Image 1 (cartoon, rainbow, N blue to C red):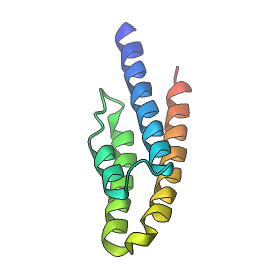
Image 2: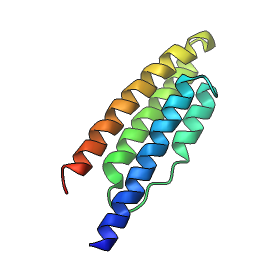
Image 3: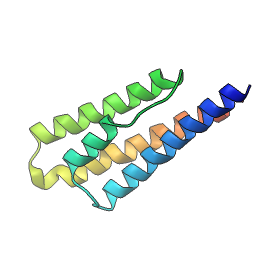
Image 4: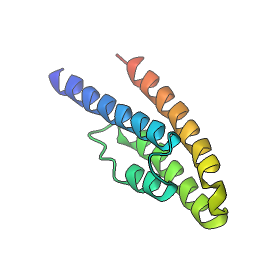
Length: 101
């Protein structure tokens, strides 16, 4: 049981870090490319990774698409849409973890 609780704590820490990352981007603390790079370097522990990895991969793919198909002046607004979607998906994921207790 301790191992499961420890794993859940690690996942919750990752979710908190991702939430903070999205909020920092929305405050314009860094640009779109840095936002993408930081998402790509998040380390996800244990078995709960598949769904979370899919969520993060979709976000980084969307940011990549924005970087290469949008005008730079539109980066922030389009990146904010990705951040909002990611925040919603992370909240849903967090809730699904808490409901499995």
